[in-house]
Length: 421
Image 1: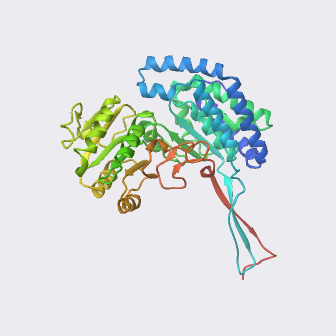
Image 2: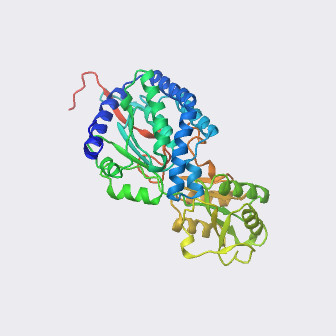
Image 3: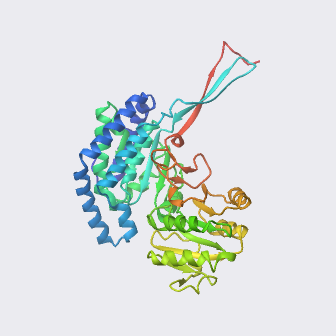
């Protein structure tokens, strides 16, 4: 590879290598890809002390940059989280291989037999911020789906991502697959991102995983197609017919389990009929758990709340903060979500089947939930093993993007000497 100071040349070299590797991966047997992922999981566990040491450097860097506690939580790796990374790699390894799956087949009166078959996309570019586990998740899913991948992690996770990437390469080599199948951009220089976004000769799709600033930059600058993963402005609507005990448990988990993930609840909508009863209990519970509640006029009389401003609606806090307001019913809740949501994940808590039906039909988000914590908005929890992100657009992939969503298809047409009249 050319000198790292020549960013365009370095990125072009990565692209050429990835394109060559993609051709090999497209025809790699399923067993070979599985072996690579299992070996990578073993390597991550064997090298966990090395990864934790590398993560310590990133944590120090993040503190010096002034990252919030929630962002530092995203960045932090300990033995339990590394065990989770290993489990994710093994889960993806154990999934059915999507490449070659016959999606549909039919016969035509002309004698043609037609099949629609899953194929890899080719080369995927993944740009992500401070979560080093994305290195493993994205690498694994791209490999499983027969795609080469170029990973560009955030500057905060530079050392952690590098250590995890080394384990993925170890897995590839042990299985006899090209190590260029999973490449990590070896610089913090942001010029590398600008190059990756315009490498139309080598990259087939870009997946940004991060905050609004990153995704906006990618959408503005990319010449390569993009799977958009916008911010998680996640709403929970507590209906008048909600089960009180369930609502208390779900709302607390949705907000506080991990505040820095995209599935964390950011806005609580409460039916007016229960504002002074269950609504008050919910607000007081969140405050007692250390959450700052920014409340509208209908809830501002509750001790400990902070008055909400116009900027609090449609905001992703990624912190121990939640906006809360009173609505007149499910229709007003749907209207609020339509105006302020990000089409990521939204939830209704109720025992009223008609309200659920209306909410599910009219809320146009990638994930719509009923009586469940929004923290389940995760590819692993959906049975995908892992996810490369949650796509909030409507083209090609939507919701958690797993291995199957990283494929396209082609038509295989067989004739019997068929000619067209």
